Length: 266
Length: 283
Ligand SMILES: Nc1ncnc2c1ncn2[C@@H]1O[C@H](COP(=O)(O)OP(=O)(O)OP(=O)(O)O)[C@@H](O)[C@H]1O
Ligand SMILES: [Mg+2]
Image 1 (tube, chains in turn yellow, purple):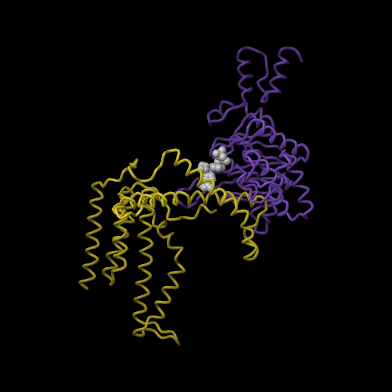
Image 2 (cartoon, rainbow over the protein chains, first blue to last red; image 1 turned 120 degrees about the vertical axis):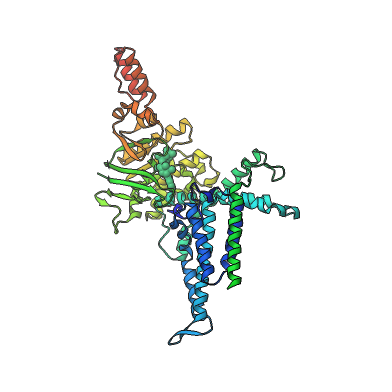
């Protein structure tokens, strides 16, 4: 039931992309997003398409997993596309009764749609090939310099990884409690809004109780292991750049330069 | 005839990288009034199997019939099925939510559409039968100890008087006395009402003592199915899949191998006692 929801889930596979340092992937994703929002023209489109599908191919993650992330934004895409298509002023292309489709409208709508789709797919590559733990590790290390100006980087990263770890646990717990109450004849589906909200009580109370219990247990367990925060703390798997990361940085930067060149030349 | 499972398979997370076949082509027939034990190694699919019986999980393949009706039929009322097939989950204390224990036990009967008065009566009866001291009836369920919570949660299902009662490891984490009390209570209600009881358990002793039929699950399929003495006769095969026969079965086999003329059939301490006394000629 609920477990089937994919929340930017990790897809285990043995690929170059999986093995890259998370910092490399964060940097690459950032540049990719910038490039997606700066390209225009067919040639630029060709370059980013080639790059993205190349990376997806290398990651060994089936394309269907990337596309799955798009399902959530289909409606948004349709609305934004339609608004752009019909409401952009400019040179009329087709006129049907009162609806005018302009050349600029077609351009804006297609550009917008492509950007949104590529944005989602590009970031999916990162979340599908990096475990949440690696991701927070990468973020923590990349943002480390900020701790000089008293930003609690380690604490933020720790909170993030705990929150990420708890999402599947809470989903599983919800699933379990829901089943237990359904077995006692609870009804979570029928009825109006108020009745539905009332019917949620048998689900929400045990869920909160268990969330607090788990939080409490975790805090105790951390204290029992003498957790005192980030200072002087070492990592079991410290992040170190390898040769392939250097290569990856080079590829990403070359790609970015090409996109910029294509844009400024045309 | 209460349940027929016809080639039932269940796969979790179908169509993702995490697909797991938890049930693989299970065929079963469960008759009215049987007391069945389901045993199997951790992860063998016991919980998955029993959750199919009240429609909480839907088989990815195969069909399930309850009293001759296909429960996956479009017009079949699954909520009605759930009021007839009661289910006590692993760690049922996590389902408590009301302000008082008593109100929580009333939740099931109320959902069955019973009038207020009947709910109250049933709740009292169920709470008394699980042996929870009366002073806790109007306490908050969150103030009880683990074992007391477990009793309250089991009472919440018993109060529904289900025709089929399923218990998924109801005694995990209880002390020996609490465990015996709860199992005795279940056996008593079975003897009294003649309802069907399905008990999922890791303890061979418990299963041997109470049930009339054992189903052994292994990697999602039914490996053995029969009366306790027949199933435990295959103790070598059980060991291969990480299970064991009750201690007394081993004792009887060793006595036999040591040249004593005893039956190897006993599966409970009482049966073993009788067999040994018989051998000694005192009976
Ligand atoms: N909600 C779920 N999502 C995905 N896989 C699951 C889920 N529940 C169980 N499984 C998997 O299905 C298989 C069977 O699990 P099940 O809970 O039925 O085992 P079990 O026999 O009850 O084990 P135990 O004795 O530990 O309770 C296991 O491999 C388990 O990992
Ligand atoms: Mg189980």
